[in-house]
Length: 296
Image (cartoon, rainbow, N blue to C red):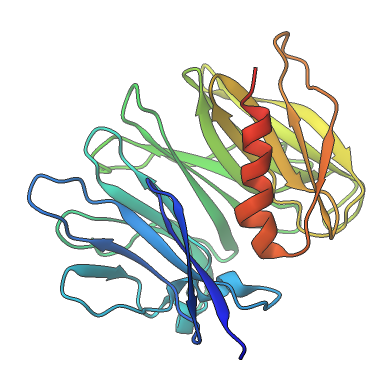
């Protein structure tokens, strides 16, 4: 009998493995008892498809306490969500690339008893893609990164106060002369960082740079972590845990690469870790890298 393994990943809980025969996925909040934080979760279908994560917007549960976001996202062709929980207010916040007649726009919704009507954060005649939310726990500010799919793609950034009442005019993080895409941000030791891939020989060409940029007094200052010859989606991610900062990425069809910033600010030698498929990369390999990278 063929079965499909599913992962239910709560943002603040462990990964639990279950079995099912159908494909489902959703972004939702389960309303808890009064006074209890509302934590969003993603239910994801893993069915061996080459791109199973496109199913993320498929509604599954119908219980009254489950508040599902963007039920029509799968049919609409929306992009994968970035999810954060504000550390001060416990407000779940979700950003994604919403498909519209004019292309993809970055939209955002937050939860306070119900999901707010998605607010358009970035829109143009071009596609705005792959948002990444980062919250500064010290100030409460909510940072948002994304990229614009132009002839020379660019990584952009905007910031809002804790109440999300207004967003700053987007600033361009990347170099205007280099194709830069797929940002992923984090906070580390009070500083804002964003990783992204740079096609410095032209959009789609190889080799490609993996770049980490730090916000220093309002200016993003980039540094090259390493270079890869992989011609697929690199999807670099920067992480901070246990006082350590590292970047991981897809280095080939069957290997992930990663490097950690050393005590002197220099990048340690690149290490590679094999993976068999997207599920293993997302749920096992990047987790295994974290276990190693956060060690002394």
